Image (cartoon, rainbow, N blue to C red):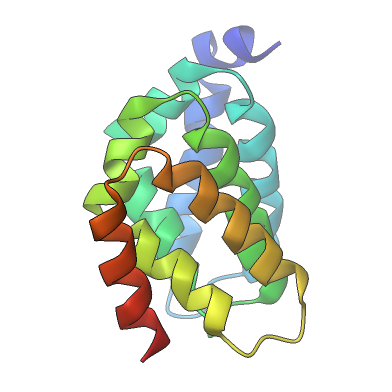
Length: 147
């Protein structure tokens, strides 16, 4: 049960592994994928873990994985995690807006990636997020990404 994991510090340790491996010059992307997948399970309908990620600057770290230079599996797992975190959590939604997630998501829509599921997941993440963002802001981000 997630609350037991958070109380025992397991959730914080999972995030710590991701943070530490991301600091290496050549991070172990397979490890990152597994950790992000575990984080998606922890974040599912569990706001205390989402709040922990916000407090530990997890949002900008996760958004940094959303570029074509990263492993496509890591991108997909990160999009799924961010999608789960966005649902019904205004704090995460605000953080994603603050760190320009709309640009990251829309950039993946137009990126030439081998895995077409990335564009689908980016579109879903974008839909989840723009429900809280004024339309004018969304349009300007999308126009910038298309150039």
